[in-house]
Image (cartoon, rainbow, N blue to C red):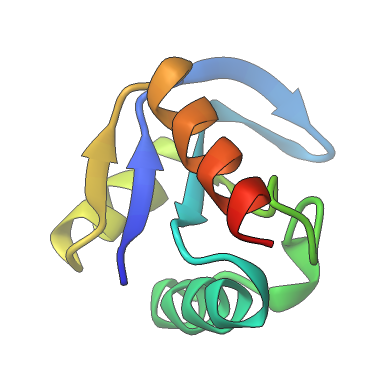
Length: 96
């Protein structure tokens, strides 16, 4: 069971937040992955309602750079944006 945070680090304005954004995701499929991701997000102070693509293999949270750094400090595993994220998503789809 692992929670990952990628290195997308894309500058964007999302709603009222102008920041540098990445993704926080679990590698577990289904409800186990959702529980793991939501529990980790709660530790970070991220509201559950901010989850993206809930209940799918693409489920994740968008996180700003300060939150990304806190996630890493709490034990999230850093991964590359792109192929690494796609591999996790594909494995979750195949397991579901």
